[in-house]
Length: 289
Image (cartoon, rainbow, N blue to C red; front, side):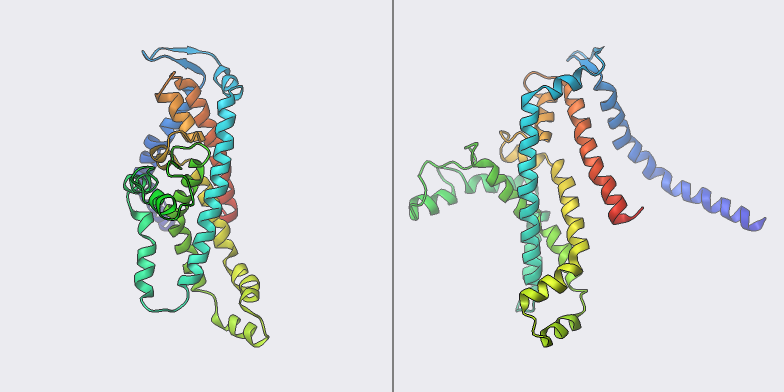
């Protein structure tokens, strides 16, 4: 009897502790999600009036060539940025796992881009690639004469994607680096010693010891980066709004040009579904819930 009473008290205490978090999640996540779902079935006018059109927004969205163009742009951005941040993070983690003078200072400096404000980093990159006063054109056009003096990588639709991928790689690789470095430091050094005695070189040690040991963390960071970059908006829009990823497409449908908030809600829900697939996979495979 006493045990059952104590268990009920603990249960009430647990719900009391969890309730504030549940309330915040309900206000900030659940309510906007259900509101988007509701509005996706309506034609929403600027005066606030709504007309029910059923699946009309979804039909219009799936027949919109600009929407499919944004999906392709998002795919290119995801592949490039995730591959770039993963490879750079892995290479940096392997390097920082070695002993050398001032290693602690270098490790600290590497993570600065991740914590720096996005807007300041974007403006810095815009200055670097400015066609008139930028450092990039000064070095490669005026000094080395490798490119045309009027080259504008950010203003050119054919090159701005590569600038965005480079920026995203540089800005967000530190989190991959930190996760991989923490796992590298836990690998038993005797495994490398035994492999060295057997005549294994550095590449063989990496392929047969290091990579299997960090495989789980590496896969997790790739999955998380895919989810995060799928929803990324502020970096892209600030650096170059002409890159129409899914997030930028949804924003412009809702708040600029010919405003169609019902269509934007439909696009946002489809994007949420795509992210949800990745989140469910992460929960099942990584968190093992």
